[in-house]
Length: 261
Image 1 (cartoon, rainbow, N blue to C red):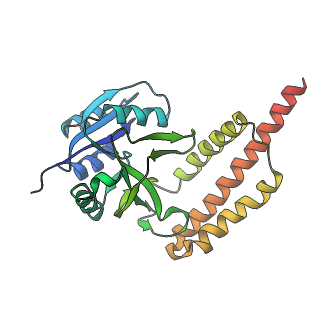
Image 2: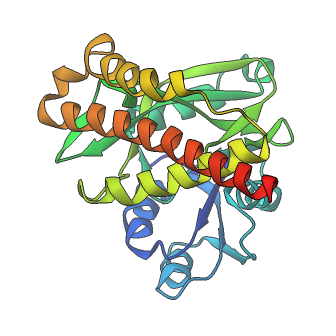
Image 3: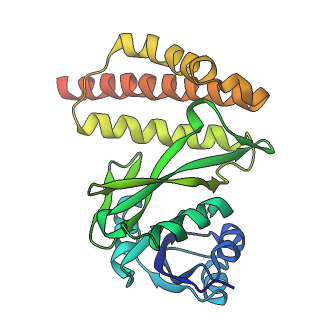
């Protein structure tokens, strides 16, 4: 049996009991330290985490970026792997991480990226806008932090970075009914962010971007090879794009009316 790697795994959680029951067995014995920063939980998140030896810290919610940076600061190991509660590691990625951390040229890198593969409608999605979904998740301590806006945060790591084989396996949507809920949240967050940035609304963008999103995902990136799930993903991506820009137009008009009063 291999010894745990001398790394920390950083996770944030809010009511993630069921997801942690899948994630924590997957990484048990893989890392020396598991850090979970949680907030506003009214399920068994903390209990499940502690059963698997995770160190749990309660923090007030400050947004994904702030919460994930707090989790980084809680980690004590030289290398940190960042995961979401609805993800696990493929066996191939585990082997790649182990090989990377034991390589002779480890000191030449500050971090590593890998692909993320999502599970949807009872199959793994291997094409379209969802794959390869390249993510930087492994970093040397103090060599990076979470950045970006409210809509999509990302781990910004100082170069150089190496790309590892194997996938993060992502269980994002339990059913197609989860799509409308998240699309509304994304559209509202997108409009607020663009309004704060004083981005001007583009009517041309509203007309063209949704069509481009569909053709890019379904044809140019071979989403049709994923069958019916690939079609639904492409159509949903197009609808999300349309709703974001339509909501931005609506918000811009409302703001203009307020300014004229």
